[in-house]
Length: 232
Image 1 (cartoon, rainbow, N blue to C red):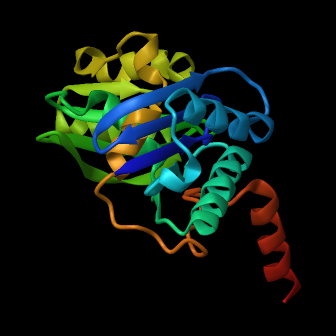
Image 2: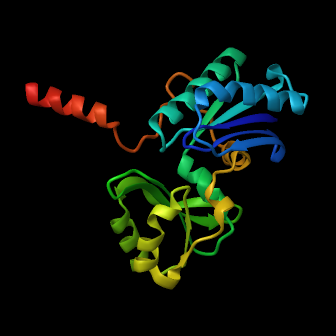
């Protein structure tokens, strides 16, 4: 099975090609540039490098958020359009789950998170189950303080993974102390090969109804809904 994996849900843009569970090609950049301009050229270049044509693809796996609202939409739009045009299944995977794969053999809790501003984070707590991951606490948008206090209650070692780790390192050490494990920089960037692996055996989504996993409304949408409610 030939699988194309696409992740534009945060600053890092990742594309990978897998043949079954083997990564045959991968491209990752972690720079603040427009994903909409660079994604398709990256896909085309990678497929050329490994001598694959679009008609040889069997599945597309895409990171569906949470993360950047614009980034999530770009990845989903491209993945769904390609899946529909090629007549192949598409699978959406949580961007938090993809990041958690960096620590899937860790003996403790895996704590992936993305900064959501104003002291909030997008997060979910995972734990290794063989070579797979089990969701221990559901993914939510909540305050970092609340997330850390909940982890402290369970008194388990916690592997903290985030491209925004620098912003929250002090509060992590303050609340969790020696329970917190913070690895080196490369572990905090989601790997598109792991995205492909995470989606390899997941059930396909309906192409036209696959939607972003925002975990909260965009600020403009929230304000619009509030205005509609007040006008009634």
